[in-house]
Length: 385
Image (cartoon, rainbow, N blue to C red; front, side, top):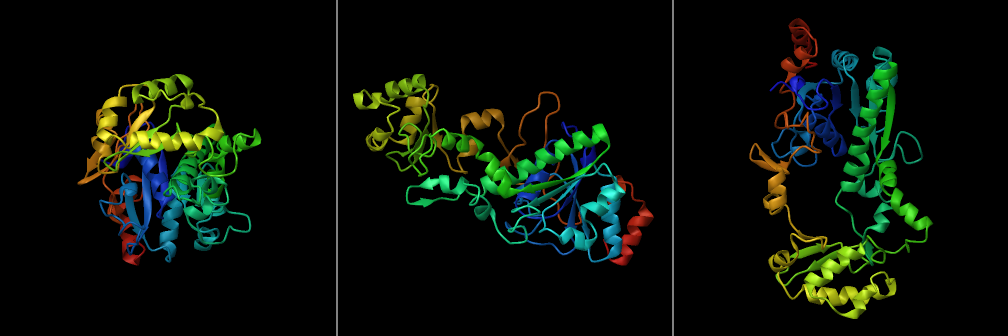
């Protein structure tokens, strides 16, 4: 299907994405899944996106948009980018501060051509501050937010994949910021720049925990607090078969339901909120869970309010009955991957296409965005396209 005919809630939204890695592609995927017409500006020579050559069917976060491949060292390519940004609602890039300015594609130039443009800038450290020009990755950005220190085992912090920095604190905040900026631009005619730093986003995600700390509800260590595995009733436990389950019956009524089903009548478990008792109770509970397999515990707890779920790996998660019933995962091009989220009752999202090869849509995408066949031919002749 042609991307700009998508019918999701963002149908009609036109976005220019400058190809990058990590949170940028994920942001583009989110927008496309909900119907935006996203054109990705790729390099003429395919790069590596960190998971393989760009355009591979395994590059799940690159799905759903169209690609044009330009040589950004040529002035004709720069002019083409500016022409596309003139016709876009939003654009975003993920380079270090100053790179786009040196190319002649910085926000001042772009906004002069399109005053309603919302220009998103995705970086780890942000556009300002002493760390701004420095290299880094997710693990570094979440380190200074307080998030990494709070996650892991007593003896060491453990990286939560790259979910907190790249995707949670980065891509989701960028998508949120771009859409907020577009709403404002449509009301006022005034575009703006979105400075999206993953370190800022990770800090924002920690808002509740900074509140806990201010109220004296966070002791500063790992595995000693309500939501970090310290509480015996909120954590993971290994079963007899080596697999794991998760438990989270925080509220008294759910805790009671869990104890009843688990057959735990030891009065020591009555002191649910006594933090000093948590280590001993956790040890006792671990021995109890280790008596049965994961499947046996599923038979005990599933369908109840015990706040239970089996810990599934990526091979098993798509077949889980709840995931299967909701269509949480789909298969595209032989690759099992998450379906678009969230769900919309009137304008459901959809995967518009598999990940494109760089330059796969040169003529079609540029033509749909208003360039003539002569202009496209001229770009090709100069080597810009």
